[in-house]
Image (cartoon, rainbow, N blue to C red; front, side):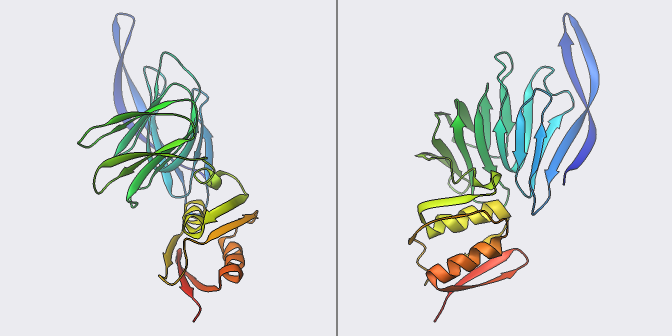
Length: 240
């Protein structure tokens, strides 16, 4: 399901020595809760939007810049253009590239903003003081904490960050805490985990089911917990 919203705005640019004014629309593409959306931008860049995400760009995209705004989570395979950098704006972090593949996690109700780089190189700049700019290499991710405005770089395989793109979820000696986090991102649900549940226990296994409850039934047998699901909130409690 794709929801497209168009709002008319005014933009101005130079063509040769003539200042040409044109009216461009702002185009917003949304991925509703429970689904993801695939689209191609006018320059050929591939974008996947995760559930509950929105991307906005000008109808004049590519005329003199390649800028988009993201709320939520998106995976980008950016077409290379040496003359026009590709910029993704979020409230707390801007990502600038020429051509690359990366995943950007920027939900408004989350405490962090995260960019994981799959291929190429990107510059990440914070939009609040203290202003910082860092260059990220493949298999690295940058995490911005909204509470203390700190920016950290970590190593990653990018497998966890991009798992929501595929039907199969595969875990290899992954902490249960990270398994829940991955399920939360893939299915757009929230977890509340009882302190008696050993979230540092390691799990190895694979799922090819798009149903979060089917996955929880397997984990329940493995770890001996109970769960309830209500309005997208999943409560995990240890059996007594």
